Image (cartoon, rainbow, N blue to C red):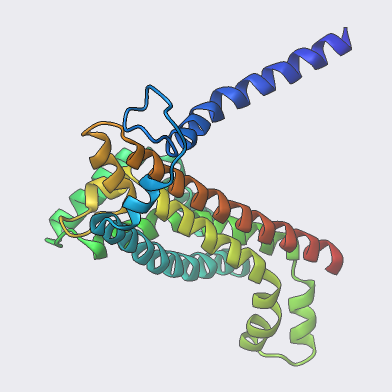
Length: 265
């Protein structure tokens, strides 16, 4: 009976994996299709990838995504690190409320957040463009950075910081030479996570992007409205590969952070 349950659970798990990833594999496969019609396979080719890199609009959308992603991720990492340190070291009455509010951008629907950001920028009469995109991306990615670094700080404890201060180090020296080096893998993982979220975001970016600030997901959406072509498949494949690589690197740093934590304590 136990063997039957185990086999059934294993089969169900594999079925879910096939259901989730088979469409992605088909998309990647047909990005190499020599025919412009996705219904038939006529041969292998790289020409759709070559045409993408020769397309100025694609390159402009890519540069917009990279620029917005890097700037927003740096700001979100700095703010998220500061917020995590504040919640850990300052046990104020409002710290629990602040901690709970920081989780709201994670749990509320993105369409509601995008609409709220659009209303806010309209009320303050801010022109939609790269600045509004950066502010929006910082808003929804900072909580993820805070969660990652808060977990690292919780595992680290206070012993090393207290020992540093007992040896005569100032709070700034303790932060610079003890706390930040210990949580640096978590900071890097948080930055990579924020960059991944920014690179992939469509819904919030759709609301707050201006006419000259089209990101890569928005450009893909514009292509899809005219029909799914091998160029769309190729562009989507590149975006998927980039996202997977960033997530893998972030996970490597997270595991490195966990191993360093275990070796210290």
